Image 1 (cartoon, rainbow, N blue to C red):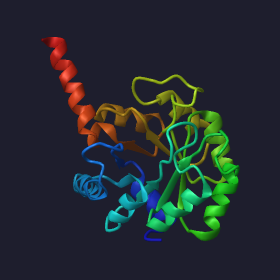
Image 2 (cartoon, rainbow, N blue to C red; image 1 turned 90 degrees about the vertical axis):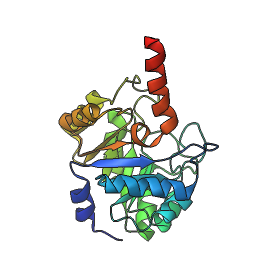
Image 3 (spheres, rainbow, N blue to C red; image 1 turned 180 degrees about the vertical axis):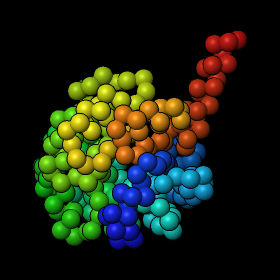
Image 4 (cartoon, rainbow, N blue to C red; image 1 turned 120 degrees about the horizontal axis):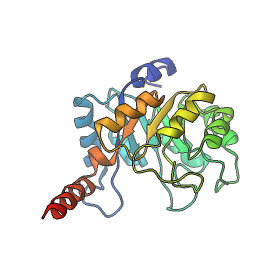
Length: 229
């Protein structure tokens, strides 16, 4: 482990985590490209990086900030690091924090979230970030042993409406009843959104699309220009 658990939390607290991901088939869907974007984000002041895919995590092994790794497998249901095998592979690739689906939905391998976390920790000294979709998810994930609670799946599991920006209400709800630190993630489109998420009770904020997905960012500007035209 490159950093102690205490060092990881201290480095992330009050900081910005940049998620460097590209969808399959996109021009930037290449591990080397994602690693280059990650390095640029670190130069810009990112406190941590979130990467998807074993090759991407390995490519960014030289980063001097905590790396949150995940492995997306599938498109529906539980697909963010969905099984214990996926979680172990992410840890072995060099992630300091393993992010996985932290909802109460059935997992493909039949294990509970608690069993998955325990199995991972039996072999790897890593932190676990549970990507949650509701307060009930967060409470259960904390009981299961998750070190960090993310709001990543808010609006995508059917338990909460999809907000236009970050789910500030959910952040506040989790902060009021859970002790594990919160990473606000999902629909943080501006610096003002990031500041609001911290004010609502998040330890750190994770921004992806608004920084690292040029296709979407270009679309925002194109829509605005067309509206004026």
